[in-house]
Length: 485
Ligand code: BES
Ligand code: MN
Ligand code: ZN
Image (cartoon, rainbow, N blue to C red; front, side, top):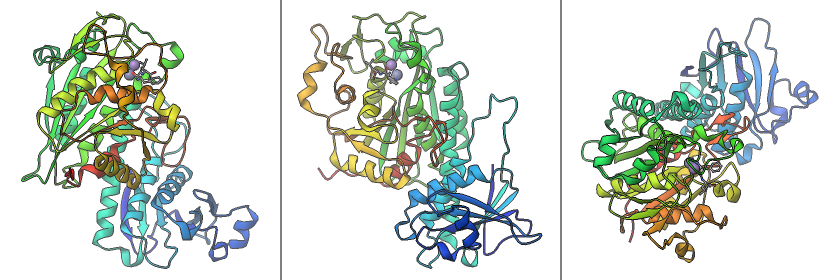
């Protein structure tokens, strides 16, 4: 991974220096007329490489759009595009924008580091030949007088948050064959050992003994058995207590309600919620997070070739509620129901689940904005604020009781899906999950089905897994939650 330093001036041996450019100050650039003749306008993420003075470093102009409207999201996206344009350079000096003549602040520094590391990421584990160059090896962030203590902290946080996001991306990009529930649990245990977390892994026998009827039933659909991973970050005298729950379906073929093959194409990513939670957990100790955080990761395949759950079967979930199976492809809510029940037993101040749960979420909000639902407006607002700061947009959908009747079953307490109604299924999945949240514990649900993957490079998101929600969750849990009600 790239080495980073803060420096007051361009370091000897630098191959290039990055100069920020703005659409509203085109004349202040080096070689401004030449740049203009090349069509360079300074729009966000635009890159123009210019030769340097003889023997000196090259100059790279990097657009940040209108200097007057500079936002961390623009910084993050621009440095991401820069990272893809400067592969092959050994050492790079990076001057950040300070349009109002002051030094760039810590949050812009953090965004720049995140953007650069996330935008330059590629998943290369299964490539025999690396197409293209890698690098740069070393980036110097150029700040007046080399920056202060807050700038060093910002650099460090940016690197750690990017690394946590890349951990999630690597897991999501991994094919299902190479990341079975047992192998995911092994990876989680290794991450826990490296990052100061307690870790417990439950095998199928323990899952049965704990009456996790949803996870057990989905897990039986495959010869590769399920796992439940519990991680705990427990600082001395915690200032609060969260529970995070992540959907970990390592491959979702749909079970007996088999998906058509085109819809199966992306189903190795159906564990993106669990990966995001693991990514977030991995940095809490390094960031000195003041709250206790429990993580619950139900891990399973959803296949038709084990002893799959039949349509019409009735499952008994942890806590005793029964669920009639109407569609074996609505498996996420079954495994999350058990995990929510478990999480609630520890009585956290708030619980948040993250899941690639429904296609209806991206139908409503597109592929760049995730859906959030919840029982507590304050928690939903806090999550939205954390997401905005992290550059991971989310938008609320209502959990309306008007649709609650669709969960009713003639023979069991609930159905897992309403046949014949395609409408509002993101909300219905949310309503189903709500049934398993203990009354009185604020809960929010993030449906990241649309945002877990992206089709082509776009700012800090590169084609494939995005690592969405790692930074939102991390940002959220660093402050304790007390519901005003
Ligand atoms: N993992 C999928 C979500 C999904 C669905 C991703 C469609 C991509 C395309 C989830 O388990 C699922 O299958 N959801 C279904 C539920 C339905 C069949 C009950 C959905 O949203 O269509
Ligand atoms: Mn499914
Ligand atoms: Zn699924």
